[in-house]
Length: 375
Image (cartoon, rainbow, N blue to C red; front, side, top):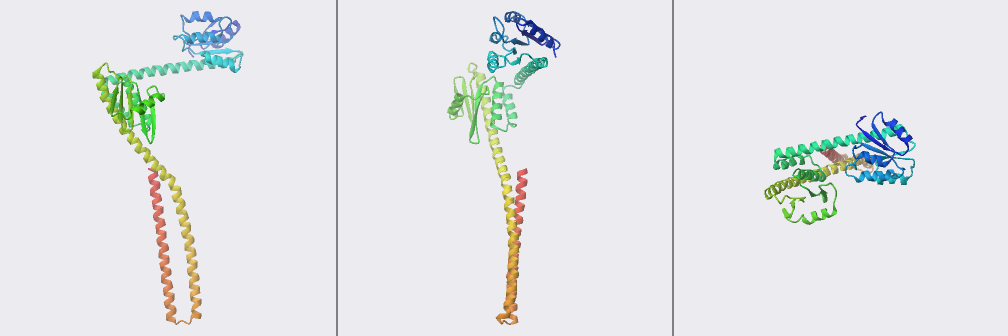
């Protein structure tokens, strides 16, 4: 914990203030106030890291004090934890609507209060680190853009676009590239019979989407006032704040963004091909169980037919031999009929073997399909 984390506690009950002071003072710096007015006066000179406010106080209660703090742009980001003896939903909603970030019920457990303050400290620390990282990233991006030049942004986009595997990824990468030019806009991507529209603020704007639908057929490059539209393939890119006051820079940006949009359209075609390939692969994978099932049925049917045909041939031979006794045929005639029957039985066996070879070919094809699906 850090003693730099300053906690203001406001409660009209001095005993409660002493308890909170003793609970938190070991890990945090704590200042206590018996009225909202004293806290307001102190905030004018010292900014606390967070505030703990009692809900019920005379003159100005915790809700009003919270609203007062949140109304000031210099203090509106200070997290506020309410302390109350009431645990009904109306009290919790009132705390939330006033701008509170957490709630503790009286009588509170010391460990719970320390934990909530510690969590707030950790959250603020992480938020500050993220803000610092974001600031560093922005500075680094601006430095890189300056060193690489405006065309470098296009080259950087083309490099990043290779890792985009969806329409949304590609849209966000386009808008990130526009941001490096200090441009704001929106992009519509039409992929696989669907379209998505993304704005620079990350929010879907129905009116903006309707504008994109309207200008998608306005030619390759279409400019009106500070807006400029680029249509390439399944990409419609609209820049909202073209620097028309600087004709040279405006012209360079128009050329570079046109290259960017054309590159995005090429990447979109590749994504479409990848999607089609994945679908074909999925189709093969879905069909393989049916193929194996059909092969199992063919093999079972083949074995059954072979057995039945063999039984028929044996029965036929037996009946043929028995019939010789009653037919009064010569030995040559009996031999001729026997050989003729044997010849056609052999042909039937050959046909069975050919059917078995076809089953083997089908099994080999199934193995090839499995390898294609796995590749």
